[in-house]
Image (cartoon, rainbow, N blue to C red):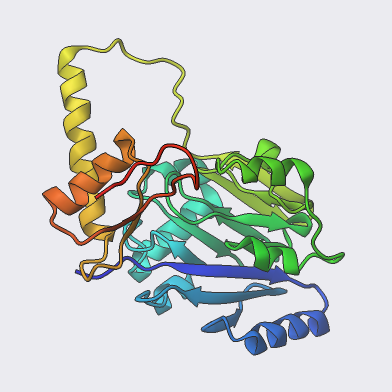
Length: 280
């Protein structure tokens, strides 16, 4: 079993060729990017795969796609699959939810525009800045490309310090850098950033619960969790769980370590004074 491919991305657009050359040179000299690619006119993309990640195959690049996560589950590992994903992102983005799994990627065409797609429930965030001319999966990378330099956003910083992944109006801890919501996409063109939602977990109406539906949902949730943990956890033991002791994290630990028998390490934060709870 191999780990799913993951990568950090940084895409920067500069209209003047000399400026694009400077960005490319800077990313190559940076040392953190395994690849630096000149793609659509004016765009420079830096790719930094995570350990055990595999590069996007030629068919993916030929379709103008750069994946941060979900390439394989979205069916984009083949040339035909990648072309289908690119076509959906370009022509029918509202149908992206028809693709399986969670996926985060950038899509570039022959013009100077871009499509940015963030997963519904994946692990990779997406940050946008400078009117969509800077796109990245790491806040520090995007902030470093701001024309005036980084400046803290008091609201974004205050909410972030609570530990909750909530971003009011998409505001990040850095002023001028926005966070693309989960299950959302952004179309970037000469007029700026145009946002849309392709997946929303809040339907207009719900069916009344029944005992049968309750059992079906519970069984489906358990099978989905087991399949995802089996596919994405490291069989060699490179797994770390933030264990609060609540039902969510405890259930994940029980499924991963108990049911699947995978090696999982856990970390818990306890106060320096007051009641302490020891977790074996």
